[in-house]
Length: 169
Image (cartoon, rainbow, N blue to C red; front, side, top):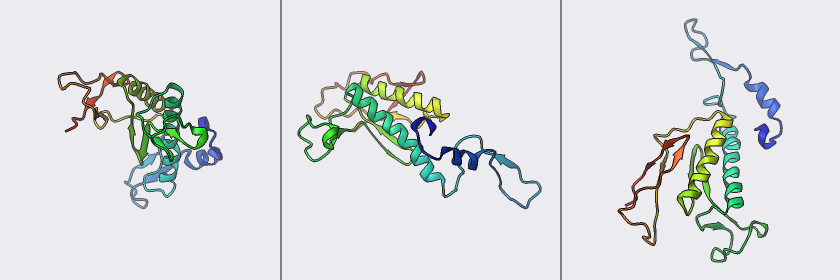
């Protein structure tokens, strides 16, 4: 969070430094667990802290998309048909959405998507976050059927591991 200049991070660090929990506080045999990363499960502060954290990733994806022209043709704003509208007028291209700990990333090309996946990997590495590759899939949507059924799926990777395709019916 320091990386994104979020205020009062020092207060949060002091709250979480050397934080421990016991599953059965009055049980002498209960193990004490020390938090090294993440947020306390069940704590009232955990959801907003995670939202701040994951929003930083979404902002990085948006900035990368804007800087490198990676989008999927969808924009937020009043005039969806006019792609000449830019962020200065309250309109901008969208390349990712997130809800809690799930993120969807969109791109018009496999190369653009790989660039965004590289941003996710860089963010995860810097923040000590692990990506569950079993739950990380990609989906090719081809409205105009430009992609042939016989074409191989794109070779998309995170940290060198090839992602699996989710079949679109």
